[in-house]
Image 1 (tube, one colour):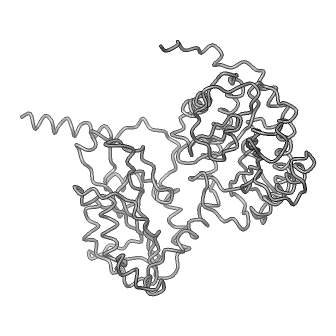
Image 2 (cartoon, one colour; image 1 turned 135 degrees about the horizontal axis):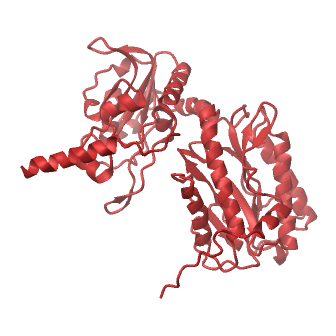
Amino acid sequence: MKLLLLMACLLFCVEGFSQDKNVPADFLTPDFHKGRREKLRETLPPNSVAVFFANPVRNRSNDVDFVYHQDPDFYYLTGYKETDAVLLIFKDKQTAANGTVYSEIIFVRPRNANEELWNGGRLGKEGVRSALGLNQAFNNTDFKKYNVDFAKFSNILFYDFNNDVRDDASDSTDLYSLIEQFKVKVNYPSKSTALNVQPEQKKKNLNTSDLDNLMSGLRGVKTKEELELIRKAVNISCTAQREVMKAIKPGMSEREIQGIHEFVFKKYQAEDVGYPSIVGAGNNGCILHYEDNYKPLITSSEMILMDLGAEYRGYTADITRTIPVSGKFSPEQKLIYELVLKAQEEAMKICKPGIAFQDMTLVTQAVINKGLKELGILKSETERHNYYPHGCCHHIGLDVHDKGARMRLLENMVITIEPGIYIPQNSPCDKRWWGIAVRIEDDFLITKTGVDQLSKLAPRTVDDIEALMKEPSALDDFVLPELH
């Protein structure tokens, strides 16, 4: 009797998980994902199949895992947000043994009452069929016996394996097992074989080079549905920058500033950050991917570089603002800041369809080199230096450095333009410049004739920043008790 009651409780909980209606209504629709699969199918080479695996779960420590994040390609094509799954998309229609004709098939985690009680609901094959519109959905327990002659395909397209998926020895349907089963099905070479075989012999019909180009072509140009989500992510991120500009005061910590940004993200129901938040005061801003954010006390003489982006429904913004902690730029800070701003604006002027990322990087480099020479920081405009060590642009979308062609911009791509100048301590220039780091990063939609700056909400001129920093903050009266 107790066992029956326990099972009833488990089933009740599972039903509650699986049919919860208290979820956001603005996720991408099944029709969107179906359309993306159809677009990919159009680009596949003749007589081919594309194979995608879900992301693995990553262990954080002991029995605690990192919050799961689906492989962006897998999510883009399916909307499925669980692990232990494999998707096959065929160029041509296939016929199953029972006569069913299909052009795609997915294998997913089966329902499991006990696991769902602890870790949340699973869609299972029926849920994938009804909620995601993938009619040929089966439990991943069926993948091993899935009978298809992979040898008949001219191309089996997939991303090669990095051997970084853990094997749960107690689970024969985990992602590791699915990958191993796939390797057997396609005659993937073993390590010992691979050492003695030339690449052209080893691959045969195994194509690990072309799928990334096909997906980049798809994901680089955004649809109307994607643009709506990106705009929301950008507006959330810009609002956070504005609130921090009003709230920041000398004596705060980098971590506190990070917390205000991310609180605003959560207030607007952003699921996560799109990448580790970068909040670097003073010389810390000279570390391009500074993620420690440990500095306990920011001072009035410093600037603070804040590179943060909200992830909203899978899509991420990427906004950087650099502001004076005191609320007013010093003469040296202002000179460097306005030089970076000028470089960004010159890149904006030429940004349109047909332009390459490299074209905009060269424009920003020319402006910055000329300006640094005029300030006496460089001896000549052609002097090699590390004050601007990165390119100025990248795609954004499901990844902060999203997939997309870099050679020529196309209408409806979404990119960043982010020049910067970083002058760390002990640089070979006058000490008055040491510790100044400025990056200005905005997000842009490529239009037919130019760009639409999506991140206008976050001020970026000296006058606008200083004016906003004088405004009161909703956090001015938020004072926590001291801890002893």
